[in-house]
Amino acid sequence: MPRTFPSVVIENVQPLVDCGRYPIKRIVGEDLVVEADIFKDGHDVVAAVLKWRVVGKRPWRETAMIFLDNDRWQGACTLYDQAIHEYTIEAWTDTFRSWQDEFVKKFEAGVSVLQSEALEGATITQAAAKRARDHADRERLLELSKQISTVAYSEVYAIARSGELEVLMATYPDRSNATQYVPVLRVVVDRPVALFGAWYEFFPRSATGRADSGSTFRDCLSRVDDAKAMGFDVIYFPPIHPIGHTSRKGRNNSVTCEPGDPGVPWAIGSEAGGHKAVEPSLGTLADFESALDFAINCSPDHPYVKEHPDWFYKRPDGTIKYAENPPKKYEDIYPINFRCENWRELWAEMKSSVLFWAEHGVRIFRVDNPHTKPVAFWEYLITGVREKYPETIFLSEAFTRPKMMKALAKAGFNQSYTYFTWRNSKQELIDYFTELTQTEMSEYFRPNLWPNTPDILPFHLQEGGRPAFMTRVLMAATLSTAYGIYSGYELCENKALPGREEYLDSEKYQFKQRDWNAPGNIKDWIARLNEIRKENRALHLFTNLRFYHAENDSILFYGKMTPARDNIILVVVNLDPFRKQNSFVYVPVEQFGQMETDEYRVQDLLSDATYTWRGRRNYVELDPEIQPAHIFLVRR
Image (cartoon, rainbow, N blue to C red):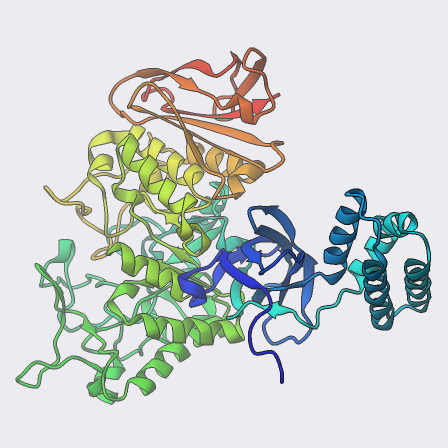
């Protein structure tokens, strides 16, 4: 009768998201470190391996797990393929180690008769010889088996403890009673830009900065060059599809528009087409090449409205219901009903739109308001797109309830918007980023920090002036590995609608006039931040973020280090944009390999000034009008 129960207990596996329901996330070349509690009844010794492979491939790769303490084991592997992987743990009774442990203990305790134990060792060694694939190894194991059964107990003791026998037995273990952890777990391995990158968003129609007319895709080249000069990696466009005419919004969200008003890019669809077409005033599909904002909205003029009226929400009188977020009204947008009767057809059409743009070179999508669509839909769409284009990256633009933001990240979004925009005080920042980096969230939720967006001009930027713009982008660039700014940030644009976190004269509704080199801009500051990010490997990692004590509540002090401590970055920020602040900060020198009395140097990578510090407690002073922050490189 076959055994129907596991021989070894494997539990409390980490990392694990929702009992394995969702995959964790890693980057190509990153390590996967897995821990688990592994044990069995009795006194037998157990052995375990970590197993992994790309989904769809048969052979498992494996590496031995090591015992830590209290039945806790750990194994690690490096993931080199950009693909979805699966991993598990296999454990078994190590018959050789169990026999070795028993024989050695008895011999060292002075037990005089060990004939049965020696014969057991010989049998175990002989069985390993039968499993040996190498002829020389097989012959040597047979020879050792014979010796164990015939020589004196003292010689058996020496053979049992010999490195040669240990290596041979570890090479050909008896895994016939092995237990494998189920369910098999998954890890999504992305290309590096899914973790590390700087994004720059601008409206292509405002690229030349004229108030009376729009720009085309071809006019965007100078804006792209300017973004590259500031060190940005990803250029990101709002929707570039045809804009509807019905109920088109005017300046400052007016319900009526004047002749020549360009309309809102998120009101998608006109006689020129829908989600697979380009707004004619911008140019042609051949002119386009960038990252794209994928917005599942339709204007009343979208072809879907006539072709698939059943895809939309209906009022009792039979008319289609436009979008609302009370008290906001979006008369120019019809939201799609993802739970309509023909939802399968609808979902397939939405996926085909993303695949259309992927086929035209778009491999990064910022998704507008994904929290207003079913999570199951995103699992379907993202999985389907990545099956054909595994390098595709999806950024979730969801400023919503925490659990929905987490669910979207679990469902497949590679990056996520965050609450950083509204975390201002020292303790708020520490608490929030500790949650992001030191809890289960770090396994699946990759934050992309945005100090501003076309929809959001936070009060601290409205009130704090140029110093606030400098500190918020610095924190975004150093707290996380991915961040972005919406154009105009580098010019410190902060004119808002009274009492609201919204831009006055927002370019969502009009062409925007700008001098891209206006006095007071912080383009050099941003360029230096991006340069520092690229030059320092500690800033390429996220979960290494740690906060340190500063005596002044207006001073935020944190750092990042590489595992080898060969790149150590300390960041000091004055959170007060109006006043000079000073503080003693407490440096974790014990983590640097420094004695607390040793001198060491810190180089400010922003100003290139160098300071000599000693021990843990050191003094800083920051004037927001001169330089509101330090980024120190620790030189040992």
